Image (cartoon, rainbow, N blue to C red):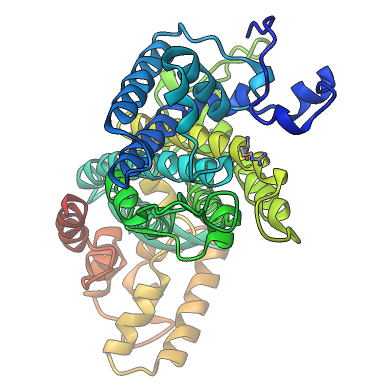
Length: 464
Ligand code: ARG
């Protein structure tokens, strides 16, 4: 950023001494808020149209302003715009360039407006778009999960509680659990977007303006659902940013849980899956290593996303109404949250199709740990034994299996009958892994037929 020419501050009228050079750089935000330039220009164009319609600007002034701003936008997009730290932020950089380009009409653009309502408007316009993009990115990851779940609807692995083998489940069912978590994230963001999409513009510095502005018109031009009701609240409110970071934190918490499972499953001890080489790296010292870097990094990034939520909550804590310069600190956490969410979602969506399942290892693991013990208890209940007694019977059979190092399905009928005379030859069907999963045949159950139906319904949901 070159900044050698001396630029008069738009607020220099009241000041006798120039700003200290370090203070100038310290208080400037242009290094990061220039990212908002498109939204700043979009907001200014809507504001100019409204001012002209209300007779506050002439039609000529309006047209000059719009043309000037469009040219500035092209220059910025082409990387030909000179940003100046002494002009503090994106708003004053653009306004000053406009005045340089079109003369006095440029100085009239700020009529009935303040940077306080301007910046709040810019962030909301930006975040509204980013939420759209994030919802699409979540949808892509969800689609990858659906495709994978379809392929693996019948693949059996142990389901865990307390990370101890609990009951067999289908891998498709497990993937669909992840789908559901993401679906709530997508809904939460849509809900948050409704509160993002309210227009601060017109609040001016804090109390409104003496010009006869038409806030309905500006709101309509910018696609906001309504102008903010209260001018003090409009310039000071950052609830929407906190809410977004809370939703982002929940989403990252989900991605970190998925990551953790992928990391565990790809370890030599589990060996359930193999991640594609393109999502892993090796070790500079241990030749055998293939490290799951991508899920590890996403798990790690969860920390900074939570940090941004706490940062924004703390930023707003105890702030008196209305705007305070503290609020300039809202942008970097938001930008970093959006960038990291987008990256994490993109890489996850590409990683899922590239996972290969080691079905034999999954199966083998499901055979250990007496995963069909509940099935045996349910079988006894169907034969008329009360559930608590059946639980006791099966517990004894499991103890026997532990001592003998054999699964329930590996015992003879005679051995099983030591524990209950209600056990017949038909018990072996329910002790198989397939028998166990396909018996859980109701909405939300792990049976392959149910998983396929759940995938169908899910495809409809994300198409809506
Ligand atoms: N750069 C400022 C921010 O990001 C813009 C608003 C400044 N308003 C003011 N009165 N200093 O919040």
